[in-house]
Image (tube, rainbow, N blue to C red):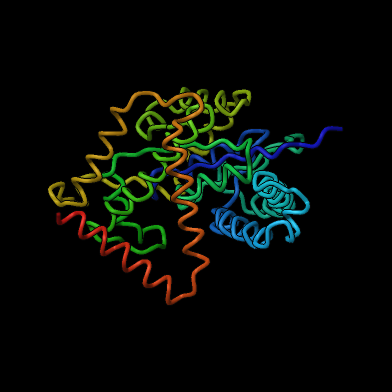
Length: 315
């Protein structure tokens, strides 16, 4: 029997963009199980890259160099191990969920569901599209894009879900940070590997949205994916008049500029833009080098990067 190639689904985008409920919807599909937010998984990529550097540091005298193991294969093998670990946790997740199921929020609707794939909707994965795509070459990414003003209102009332409320500009900067990273991933990976789903389309016509999503994932359509939408779990809806926002601040204006740029952008190439991929790779490698520095050097490097950024913006 041929070995199964891991093909997880990563839902990325800003907090309060509907990523949680979207992932729960995917989890109702017979072949997909949704995970709680992982937070740890994407960081594996940083460690794997540094381990490969360590394993080849002495050139032909190093273990990985003598074994002629490429960086690509090193990543892929670690990804297979991570997939095995994640899949080992799925029976416990299903059992826990089914003991205290809320409405239509299941992780397995039938004992016959194969559940061969898993989905992770950790928003911070927006910054780790590159290493995740190296760990899981067959992975598919979905960028859930929501209007920044609605996200800001929701983040400013985040305490309703047990988190903390964001202040006004922090909410906008958070949207911009995560959305910019996810948008970079879209341009780098291309539409064959990363799909943009607009929150307004998802909420206005969820059946049409999920038909498109499941076709992108190579899965048959199942109406079960719509069932969690009747549940209000971790709702990101906030009445617009209840949380005023100032759209004239620098943070709000930058978020709106980025949002309009994304909306107006032409369709991404099938396999992505070479320049965008190279830039995403370079940014990741810079982060890996930063992680290798001793703490004092990290502080100096961060300070110099911020100082340079301030100088460029003031010039």
